[in-house]
Length: 136
Figure 1 (cartoon, rainbow, N blue to C red):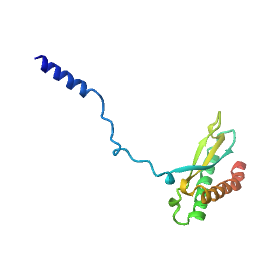
Figure 2 (figure 1 turned 90 degrees about the vertical axis):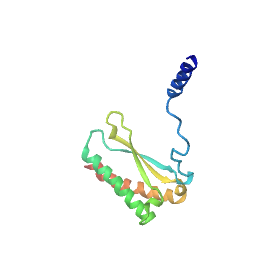
Figure 3 (figure 1 turned 45 degrees about the vertical axis):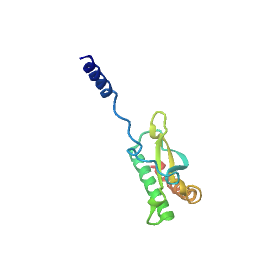
Figure 4 (figure 1 turned 60 degrees about the vertical axis):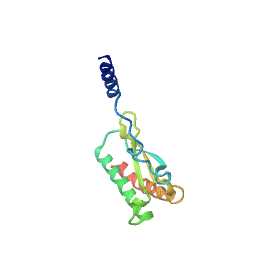
């Protein structure tokens, strides 16, 4: 009888040990280092101290337009091959979108030469059109 209780106790302990660890094959592998996205350049923009949804929407449309324009110039019809994108991070203290940080993201293999030119064109479009948005 003692052996039966001992076996049942061991089974209970093993059963309550928690979920089994995932095998390495079950989790997705990270992309190869040259295919990972890297931040190529970051800039901050002041959008105004007072919340304005129209200005925020116009700025978002400006970012999308600048991304499309720069991608078309540097990648033609295959922008996904260079892995070009951007990130937008609010940085304002009281009104979070009073100041934003825009980062140009590019695939690591393109980051040095073509990535620098692409990000420069991306920010050039933003800089040239931002005054119109700020004046609204």
